[in-house]
Image (cartoon, rainbow, N blue to C red):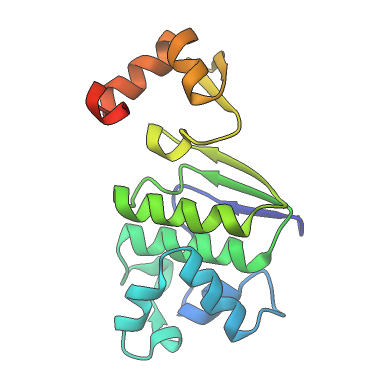
Amino acid sequence: RTIIGFVPQKSVLFTGTIESNIRFGNDSATLNDIKKAAEIAQAEEFINTREGTYASRVEQAGSNLSGGQKQRLSIARAVARKPHIYIFDDSFSALDFRTDAALRSALKKETDNATVFIVAQRAATVMEADRIIVLEDGKMVGIGKHPELMKTCSVYKEIVLSQFSEEELK
């Protein structure tokens, strides 16, 4: 378990502070580690607007935070662990497209020497992945990179075209 950083779609937060929620799972994380993880997870901006910033209170289950804020704190928690394997189970779904893209860009730099699994319904989240596995009704119907799947996998192409126009894809 110590080598895995898992972020579920439904974020799990605990009563405490923002700092304690990010530090959970890595007791040796310094405040600088926590701030770096929050920066990567695109949580720094909203944290800094809260009274008390990292000492700001998190209510039970994060009831005083939005869905996107909860997801970003859960992602920051995984990043602060510095695991060898990251699993993001549709954990970018509550993020707007710009935040999703910025988070993936920052995360890519942080996870160079790690294995990253991303489960997503949003095509933009996985388009740059080394390998995309397309599932339909629980069965694998395609595997490859984005350009290859656009040519060979009708299910993937249909998903992508339902989310982007032909012009956006060029």
